[in-house]
Length: 257
Image 1 (cartoon, helix red, strand yellow):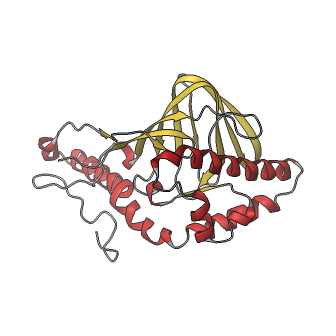
Image 2 (image 1 turned 90 degrees about the vertical axis):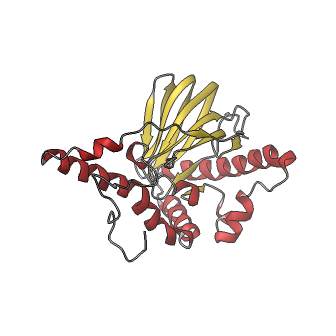
């Protein structure tokens, strides 16, 4: 869809219908997460603290146990995680997945396509957040597969360092450090965020528009879109990647038709 077109203008129902390029429920992103089991410098095993500037994230815990440490304007919180737990957090919540033993989760992210486009910012110390280039160099895992685990651990440790400083400040009643981190995160993603409105239009918004059009069609007695019914299956990535929270297997939930 072009930037000058109305959101959802390419959604129709009935014969010749078109659907968004992601028809997974809600236009979300799905992946499987094995939370890192090695310890950060504070002795806690788990992932890299970070936030999302636009997207909401959910954990559906499938095995193991651990916790979600979170930090926001409301303060610090630790939420227990065990098989069957479902927890989600909105944009701006700094979160850290803590692994007390074999913690695995299915992750749902709103705005499929947008998180992959750089929606997250890790809580590095301020000197690594000076600008987008400095941040990118700190966050990069490089191409050499032999050193990716080492780089992932290093950036995790830096993010934990920054997270602990933010936590200390917030718990002392000083919100200025958190505000400064939010401002730095916004500056880091601002340039790449120029593409995000179109991603939202093509996926979650288009999915909602399609659902609305179908609901209106059913209410008027038009069931023609049911003739387009089909089953789809997500295609998993061939290998586990190094995510911010752990080893990650992503799934392609774009329209496979």
